[in-house]
Amino acid sequence: MTEAEERYYSPERWQNWLTRVEEEDLDLESEETGRLLMNIQNDAAIALAKILAAYDDGTLDEEGALDELATVHDIVMAEAEFESENEEGEILIGSVQTSLTCAFFAAEEYIVAGPSELEDDVEAYVLAAADAEANDDLDAALGYIVQMGTNVIDGEDLDISVLDDIEFGLVTEWVDGIESLKSGLSEPEVVEEED
Image (cartoon, rainbow, N blue to C red; front, side, top):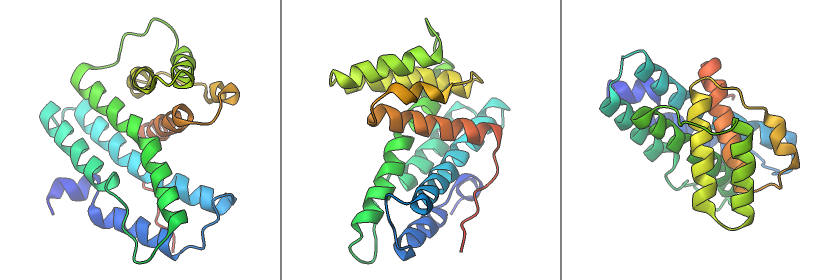
């Protein structure tokens, strides 16, 4: 394992979460399982936030930052493998991966092109993405959230209450991932893998 892998995220760290998921008695409707999902998601988002911070302060150049993002992406987005059949665990990890999809794209876009020039506030982009999703234009929806995400990475605040009137779906999950990334940027504390 390279020093950089240890610094930002490691396959072992991700495996520890998968092991925890496997050992838990999951109830996808329970608060406890929801908290586990958020801890896993936030832990991975903190790795992205650290890469972005290293890029912003010049510790990583563009190529290095993109390589590190790709490394974390490959770890987190790999198909979850459990010792035995675990449908709830697969759903939970799938939800984490779905939420973080846009966070990865937004981080990459931010490194390559900086924050997008928005014609409106970030909440308007969330609403536009929701409209696009409702019309089955997922590429457009993804594009809106990525543009919004680059600005959140750049320091813009997102009023999460914008999701209150949006039907649950990909857009709400993607925004959730951007929100985890935002939290990681403002409070880059490691999420402890509880026993």
